[in-house]
Amino acid sequence: MALSQVDDARLRALVQQAERALAAGQPVESTRLLAQAQAVAPEHPLVLNAEAVHALRSGDGNAARERLERAIEQDNRNPAFWVNLATALRTLGLPDQEMTALKRALAIEPRHLLALLQKASLLTLLGKPREAAGIYHCALATIPPGAQLPPSLKPAVERAVTAVRENNEALHTFLSERLRETRALHPRTDQQRFDHCLDALLGRRRIFTPQPTFMHFPHVPHYEFYPRELFPWLAPVEAATPEIRAEFERVFAEDQDRLVPYIAYPEGVPLDQWKELNHSRRWSAFYLWREGAAVADQLARCPRTAAVLETTPRADVPGHAPTAFFSVLDAHSHIPPHTGVTNTRLTVHVPLVIPGECSFRVGSDRREWRLGEAWAFDDTIEHEAWNDSEVPRAILIFDIWNPYLSEAERQLVRSATAAIAEYYGGRAPGAGDA
Image 1 (cartoon, rainbow, N blue to C red):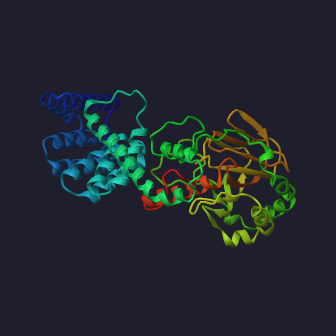
Image 2 (cartoon, helix red, strand yellow; image 1 turned 30 degrees about the vertical axis):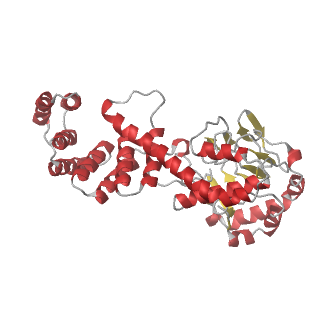
Image 3 (tube, rainbow, N blue to C red; image 1 turned 135 degrees about the horizontal axis):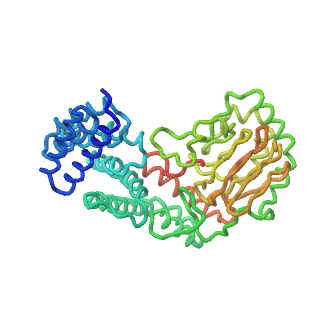
């Protein structure tokens, strides 16, 4: 039976007061307040959750689990219920079910601090300290600077800080060994910039803007749009615009099923500015190269574009670069402010279909795309795009090496990225495409 507005408000107030009393070390008062809430609605999910918390305090994991499962049957969208269920399952020694409960909590609220801390703790218990360190890092990132944490949370946060620091030190030792051979190939090359890059990656030194999501290479000039004279190959690329555009128009007309959303994050990942575009064809891509591998059948559809790409100094990091694709932004669509993964590369735009009212901002520099005028920019500086026209806008996008990196530094970046991916057993964290 649904509660009246007055009874619902009274029940919520009683439960909140009971929780505060319990947290303040007043179990008798908490029990008294909870009894009043039980009298109002004994099967209300908030009451069941409060009863479960009391059961957990007294060490009765089975009772807590039973009440939380009843609460979740009525309301499975409250992340606190899932976190408390995970805690009950921890006391019962059921790690697989605990992980499932924590994943459900994080699918509802990806930045839920308690869920992140407990997930990292569980990974540590399961003998996965590296995965745990990554989750601890995410947990710490949710805490605003200067935030006053409840005393009950401080031990867990301190464990998180320690775990992240120890993981960074372990990764530093790992990389030192993996990079020794690559460093030895270049004994007369100044590697200070790379050392700064690696120290920043490991949290040993701080770097201010640009703001990449993965690897920041220091002491290179920070341009929003890079000077054209650095790219003598750019003019021939621009000259090929009509042929590239013709190939794009053909695949756009004939291969619509191969255009995929550029933003495609899985459930449980904080979306921030990407919520509206996630899994949306409003910003779509026809890939020619993706994460270092040619998309052979699609590349074969565009032989002239493929030949032009071969003339450019494309970034080549196995498993990560190059990436090249036709980018389509629908009419009246906006790509929100964001930053890319690393300033060891630059991004090139070749305008193909520009209907007007299409603009692009990098840092403080906002420009209009113009047919036949390409540019290279540092995508680790905040940038965004608009198509305010009535038809789609299309450009060719590909990545190139930052021209200020020496060949030795490029090789070190390749080796470091591969080693970091190896360390984590797959892909280097933060080294996505956006």
